[in-house]
Amino acid sequence: MSALAILLSFFVALIVAGLLYVMFIAGPLLRLILAVHDFLRTSAFGKLLYSESSHHANGPWRIDLSLGTERAGLYTKAVIARTSLFALRPPEVVYFRADHDSAGNPIRQHDSYIIEGGDLDARWWSLTAYRRSRLIPNPAGRHSFSQTTVARRSDGTWRIHFSRTPHPENWLPAGEGRGNLALVLRFYGPGTHLLAHLDTAPLPAIYREAAA
Amino acid sequence: MNGVLEWLLLTLLLTAAFLVFLLWRTPYFITRTVIRGLGRRLGGPPWNRFLIGGVPTSGVDRVVRTSPDVIYMFGAFDASRGPVLVRCAVPDDGTYWCISAYAKNTDNFYCRDDRGAQNRDFNLVIAGPRGEYAKRGDEEVVRAPGARGVIIVRAVIKNREDAEEAARIQELLKRTTIAPCSQAQHAAPVLARRGRQVP
Image (cartoon, rainbow over all chains, first blue to last red; front, side):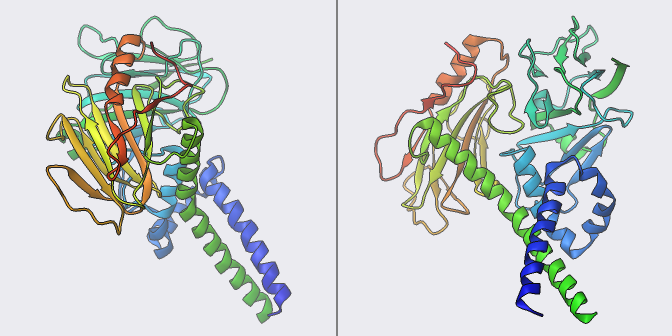
């Protein structure tokens, strides 16, 4: 093979790798390649990239227990660095993330949601809303509710209204815009029951209230 | 035909190699960016110093997915010239507090919270991978996977609207200091200029 062909191969590979990297990391095109993820996970190359069986799903909530650990693969570490930098490793804190509501639809900024739950199994917990992994700007300056700030009903349960428009009960502002949002549920000092039943422990439900 | 196949194979292999390299370096690059930003905010070298943040809010959340209910104290350790001593002051009023250390690839290699700490005031020594340290007392010694990395002290603020609570948490964080073991004097942490300030 000529030196020119090798040089060309080098540059083509560099461009393709750059494109693949953007697809993997930047997010918007990630869904397009989800179909090949399952195949990749089972291959030797996939094992280098991903974490080993550390993902759990519980309703709309997802958790990756490899967060912050050496077990995380190269791809997982790169994504963590972009979206959850300097997370604490379990069992110190566990982080559940929801990009979809309980019906499986993406959480969108222009829709209104009700998040319902009760006491959660942790020393302290908080529920925070993000857009592109950043706190959402809003005039109220409110980004979260927590064990100590959420107003409970007489039966001990709580309901958070996650929407653009204010609500008298536990209003979590979704800000202005039309993008997709994410919720992160943090458990500081999670209980042993939660840790043992990550897939089934009771977690808040997320319902879409109405399209704006 | 064979030449084309060879070229495609080479391109494929190079693509895979570049992709793995990019993924591998991403956490290092982001950590380096964060440490450089820390240095800019501290107004000098970032190593073995702490910066206390204000109450996190949108626009000043410098790190992705910052918790708005936690006041953070960021530091970067450098154990390349010898171990680093962190004097930790742990709250005794039930406030969730923890100190954690990260390698440059973002692995969280150490974490101790207020309930796990044996004493309200304890010393943590961070030694580099090849650094020697002779244990002197009841200090906790941890060997970092690399000579440099990040330290974060977190304390939960139970009500972020409460300015007095925020000020109390900042005062609490100020009592944790960092310096090389060889250096007797520990400099006080620096308060961030940006972020929602508290009285």
